[in-house]
Amino acid sequence: FLVKDESKSLEDIWIKIAELKKINDNDTLQYAEALLGYSELLKLEGEYIQSNHNIDQVITIKKRLLGEKHESIVECLYKRCLIYLQTAKYLEGFQLCEYVLD
Image 1: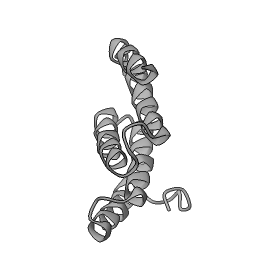
Image 2: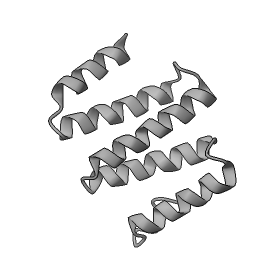
Image 3: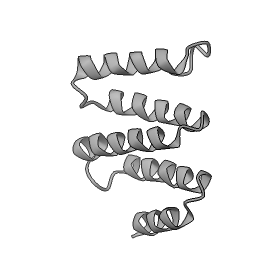
């Protein structure tokens, strides 16, 4: 639902995600994927801190539901690395890449 209607504002999208959270008690993959998509939109808008915060939430949910080593967790960490690169936090990005590769 995040891509179908390009005229929706970030606030409209956040309201939909909040509805998912309310319905699903913040603990489903559907909510996590919606939050991850929203994080990508925030990143495009230059809202890197909030985007990174959302990625933290997604990682927490996915670790609980899928386990620590699931490939979906690696995808989230990769997205965080991209944020570090875009915000010139090269050391943090490098350290995170090393963690992922271990």
